[in-house]
Amino acid sequence: MPDQGLPPPARFHHGIDFTRAFDRGQKAGGRFCQVLLRPRGRTQDGGGRCARLGVMVSTKVAPLAVRRHTLKRWVRELFRLRLKERLDGWDCAVIFRSDPPDHVQCDAEVLALVERASQAKAEGRRRR
Image (cartoon, rainbow, N blue to C red; front, side, top):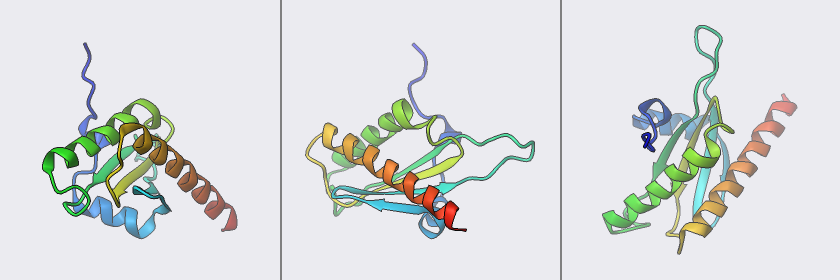
């Protein structure tokens, strides 16, 4: 069975990654979370860069570490299965505002917010 996780190039590793997403990202917020998308640019050889994901869950949202890790796993799995190819060349940050009651509502909201943030980035590009 192949490795089902996200490889290191597909994850945020430092706080500066979140800071860049906050400063320059297209935002969309919902009831349970907020999604920020930011373009990564191109590599030296002209090729694209893979999509990266960062997830933040504060202790105010989910006081128990088990629940915080569960929420992060849900979002990473959704990203790996349904969003990674779609967001190729973009950084995606997901910040939880409140604890969703189940996996289905969490997935539905994240997918809808990614779509809204994608629309915002397309509109922002047209205006310039």
